[in-house]
Length: 100
Image (cartoon, rainbow, N blue to C red; front, side, top):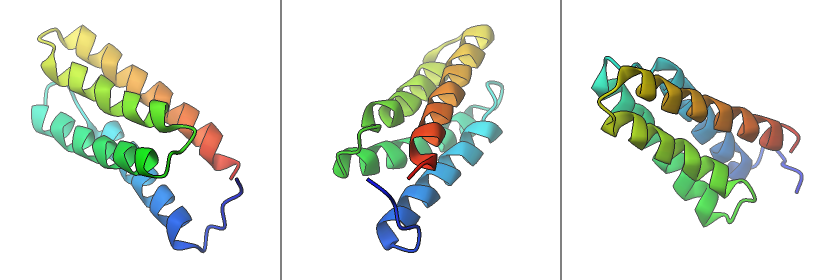
């Protein structure tokens, strides 16, 4: 599947991905609202990937799930690990979607 970035579908892919990356980069364990904002962006990206039955829908959903685990932990070190896993999944998506 090769994306024509001028199409609305590919523009939506890119917008959701970029917004999620920005929100996850801004997320801080000591600022719970930033985690909620990041989780919301990740949820929208995951739902869109699932709607399109994208081959990377599991990675997109994992970003959302990992941020949820970061929100629910009381341990700051564990929170940071969950955020790091979210970053890793976003890197996987970047590699997969960047070649389209």
